[in-house]
Structure formats: C-alpha cells, structure tokens
Image 1 (cartoon, rainbow, N blue to C red):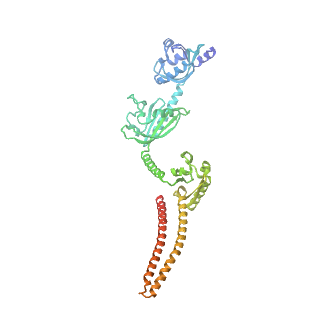
Image 2: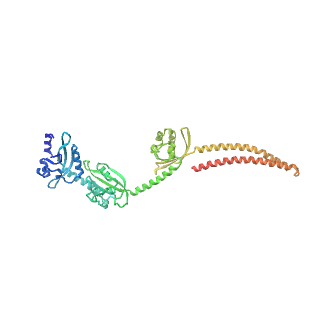
Image 3: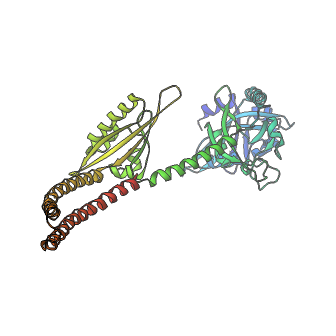
Length: 467
C-alpha cells in the first residue's frame, strides 16, 4: 500500500494489519486505546479477541469469503473492549495481493461510529414503542421483529401464543428454544427476508397460531420499518382475522362455479356482460358460435371482439347497437339477429335482460341467443305443405261433388217413384256405389291430413323440448 495513503489513514482511523491467516501483525495507537488492549496482548492474536458476540457467524463467513477472493469488504461491527464495554466501528478491510492475485496480508481501517449507533438504537426503540402502542389493543395479532431476528414487541392478543416473549430469537423448529413462526405462517422465512430487504407483502392465508388444528383465514402483512435515514431496522407483521368473510367468499365462489357449470351445459349461447358491455362470462355454445377461446374474449366488448373476429364484425356491431337500445328501453328485449359466415346464414332470436344498480346505473346484462334457423325452415315447409293440402282438398272436394250429386238425384227419383218399381234396387245399388266413391275420396283427404298433422306435431314438440 502507498506509504502516503497508509500514513493518512493511520493518523485518522483505527488500523490493524494481519497475515494471510488472520493473525494480527500490527496495530496503531488508536486501536490499543479503543480496545484497551496493549500491543503485546494483541500481536499474534486474531480479531476474535474483541468479538462482542453481537453478530451472527454468517456475517464473518461472508467477510472472509469476500477478502480471500481479493475484494474489499465494508461493514459495521460491534466490538467488545478489554473492560467489557462495547463500541461500534465502520470497518474497511482491503487485501494486499501477490503477483498471482492471492492475498498475502490484510489491512483493516476503522472509524468510530458508537454515538451514531446509539442514536439509531434510541430511535429504533422509540419506533418499536410507537408500534407497540398503536397495536397494543387491536383485535388482530401484531409482531415486530428486528433485523437481528429478535422479537422486540407484540400486542396483547399475541401474548397468548406459546413462546411469544420479548427478545425471543426467531428460528426454525429444530431448536426448542427458538420461536418458530414458520409453524403457523406459511412461507415465513422467504417473506421475512424479502421484507427485510424493503418489500411490503400482503397476502391471505390460513393460520393456526396455537397449533391446535383450528386454522382460520387471516390477512397477513409484512411491513418493513426504516429509520429516519431510510434504512430497514425491522419488520412489522400483522394478522387480521378475515375468516368469516373468506369462508362466505369461498361458499359464494362454489355456488358461482355450480351456476357456471349449469350455464355451460345449456345448448343456447349465453353471454354475461358488465355495465360497460365487457364479456365477463360466456358458455361453451357462445365460444363455439364465434370460434373463440377464453384468452381471446375475456373482458372485451362487442366492438373490441369485432377486431379479434373480423369475420363476425358486422353482427358484433349490430349486437352492440342492440345492447344500447336495450339499455335505452330500460327493460328486456327480443330481437332477431342474422349471422353470416363462410357462405351460411343463421338466424337467432336474441333475448336481452338488463340489470341495474340501486341508483339506476348499469350493472350487467344477460344475453341469450336461440337459433331459429331450422324452426323457420320448418315453418316454411309446413306453410308449403298446407298450401298443397288446400289445393288437394279443393280438387278432391270437386271430385266429391259428382257422387254427392248422383246420390241426391237418385234419392229424389226413389222418393218420386213407385215403391214397387223394379228399378228401386238398381237405383239403391247406384247410390251405394256413389257412396263408396265418396268414402274413398274422404279417406284420401284424411290420410294426407294425418301425415301432415304428424309432421307438424313433431316439429312443435321438438321446439318445446329445445325451449
């Protein structure tokens, strides 16, 4: 290291030098003064002679990993002097490397920050006290965990939880002396670490605070708490009981899914739209009608769908117009809409049912489409058959008039002639023959009418079944 810079740093900071194994080879007067150890007591020793026990092993493991790789390490360390007093330093450790880039010694420079840390600690406990006062009598559970994973405060409701005591160490359940939050908060370790890094986390989860198998739903919040300088000093965890609301929501969702399944089974296309006309729910028949998937239609309006399905642009624009007409009428409507696609034409009887909020604003609309294409074809066919029947009946009626006229004429002859006339039997035979001819004509009309009636009856029955 450059002698000028070393001299400057030695004059203005606490300095020590160690060999590559971490044994102290040099300390300046400031080091001896703050640690209250003599040079003789320090040379040849390691820095753990002033270890306060405040920091975790992970901190020093990370420090050695950094400097042994040739990099400079910086951090705040709490040390213990020979007389037992604690002091804080901001420490910089820089390795000196050989030609191969391997450390041969380490230079440590420290600046006293004890007064600043004491002020921070005082502010910290003021913050903890304020949090405790805010949540003391709240109905939910509240915990404040410091950055060193210590439970610093909790509210009255939380005091009934086993092992919840002030300054309890937070850890996993393997060690019986530690308070294991993971036993009742799902994914606690990851959430705590993320929150210590400054992330606010809000989630709903089932929690069993007393490990009695009675889980309840809570709204759990991990909120990072910082000092006046924006540095995170701990995490406030709150758990608010939402069990009643959550279970009602689950029941509602279950009922909703049952209705959704029922709607999906209906063969007619059905659309549920919100007050802005966005497609919120449609059944399988509706998706098949416009050849779309869930990812294509969810939350879109008719006009937006016209861009997704340009082949149906015209009918979607018509549908938009008819929706607005229905809103304008304030009641349900029925309209016939025509869909033309790939050379085919289908007609639908579209029923719209608007739903309003209490204040009269639009809430939702239910649209049900019933395909009447085949029904109209069958009506046209029936109409033609009826016309044909009328023609046949007219022709057959004319055919029937001749035998009827003969029967009437022969009846008059019998009436006016002598009863003993030998022609009576022949006349009666002629009347019977005419009656048979008339009977055949009537049967032909009835047979045709019966076939037509059966066809019409079947069509009407199918219509009723579809409805």
